Image (cartoon, rainbow, N blue to C red; front, side):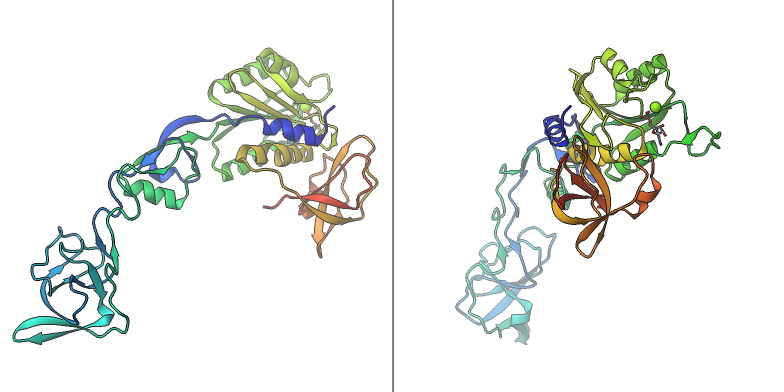
Length: 387
Ligand code: AMP
Ligand code: MG
């Protein structure tokens, strides 16, 4: 049986199944770009005024006759007298024959013989080219600006918009079908008989995945082999990943590994030397479909999902910081253990609990510590449960 480290390495080697699709730019945030984007024009596309003020050519004089006014949204104007100026607004094209902008705070306007003039009252020397956002100084037409594989954030959305892309080619997140299994399981809204329990696993998986923007379907299957087979087969037509809870242990009705083999899956591994979650099954198929089948006890499903599945799906490497642990029980000689802990004053305190079927003591847990088989370490890697 492999240990958790080996399992994590095997899972890291699996590719998250993704397909390319076009989405509206408004829906692309958080996704991975699947095309290269180039500038459709120079940026800025013209010499752009960066300040409200005046545009001038002659920087050696201190008074300029105002001969025109340039607003943002108007075509480029032209200075005719090189000792004169054009009043200008931020965002307007700098007039032809003008080299520099003087900001409004550094000038006073005055009237002389019915004409408008501006006088320089600033303290700094006027620099050639000041406050002109020069054409193509950010990037040139046809420059590659965003490469395929880039994660799309707010800046990328704005860049795509400015180059006129209303749709983007992106990697589609995999569709995930969630199944709970078991004859003893009923839905949340049902009133269980004395021997039945409500499914907590499926809604836990569904809600976490939904919070990360994945689309999921949820269904329940009884422990009947032909029904299990039919349900999984039809889910695999539309979904890249199956998440199952229950039916992977050694019980007489634990059909999942058998059915998956019949559907063409090969185990990446089945069983890890760990507690909880020993029977975890991970399998893949030649067409790229993947299955993570978690043992049904709520804490087993939660631990396997949180440690092995979610970081892999989100492309995050599992990085655990080490923390001193108090009330640490002796390690198991053969199995690594994931122990629930509460953090207090920089230390982790292990929590009393009744094993992997006991959800309720976990409400106090801030996370898990990882105690390796046979270890005597009193400081252990910590994995937060509340991100
Ligand atoms: P299994 O892995 O199928 O042997 O299931 C082990 C135990 O997990 C069962 O006896 C149930 O108590 C519990 N269990 C299985 N499925 C679920 C579920 N969907 N939600 C909550 N508990 C479950
Ligand atoms: Mg079962």
